[in-house]
Image 1 (cartoon, one colour):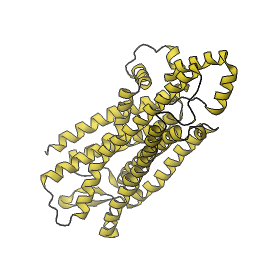
Image 2 (cartoon, one colour; image 1 turned 90 degrees about the vertical axis):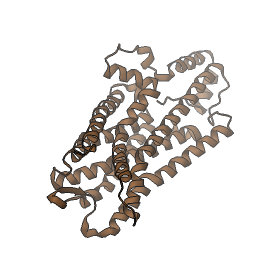
Image 3 (cartoon, one colour; image 1 turned 30 degrees about the vertical axis):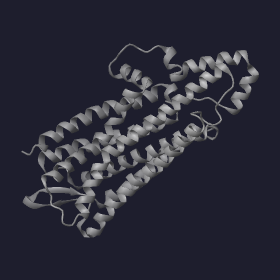
Length: 350
């Protein structure tokens, strides 16, 4: 047997276990804990649900393809597998755009972001992302099919032979633009704008520079927390690029390099790109565990059954101390707080 017949199933077994535990715990954390239900976390739950769907269905069947070297599951499963991969990809990249847009609004236009109905609007955007992703994935359900190759092997392909070579090239370019290049350009524009605002405003968020001692500390904590979330979202984007760029590079080479020779290098590169595209579905919870103190405590609680965290920590999230200062200042200076609540609202993020 080829080396990949052993290596790929082992890698996919790791993706399956880590992906189910990580994404499942993320969803459980936000559902069971009211203080974790904020705008960024709603998007993260949507992202985790898309990844979990891919892991439960596509990861097992894709791993066995490298064991048997052919497709064993029939035409219907072929269509479902290709559709779910595209659905999950769409949910991932469009949710990253939405998360970046939310960070842009939180830093550049905080007053607009804090208007009523933010949570319902966020859930509506998340639902729309699923609808649009499903519509785009429906093309794969139509095109994907099984066929008999050399040595009477059954294979699953997203390219119907009757649609011609032009469709293969169109499909590669379309997926690169819709699921990679254009979203990254939008995300990049958001982060360039955020960086410009932070530099020009002396590291302060517009409209949130309070003049009162206790509230100043709370607002400073909130500002730092928002920038921390923005950096976390940027890390998700970088991980997405690293995981999906090899796949796009290989597909462009395979379909557009007329005189290209399929050497051992491209064979290995193809397998690496294939595995990395699935690794993306399990890595976000790991990033949250490493970088978010709040998520790490919940993960330890649910996965490792560590001691139940104190209510004082989770009742106020990462801003509990800031909230206490805010309340103390409220008792001391109601007039000042009236102005602050009207013009500079304080909310919590991750």
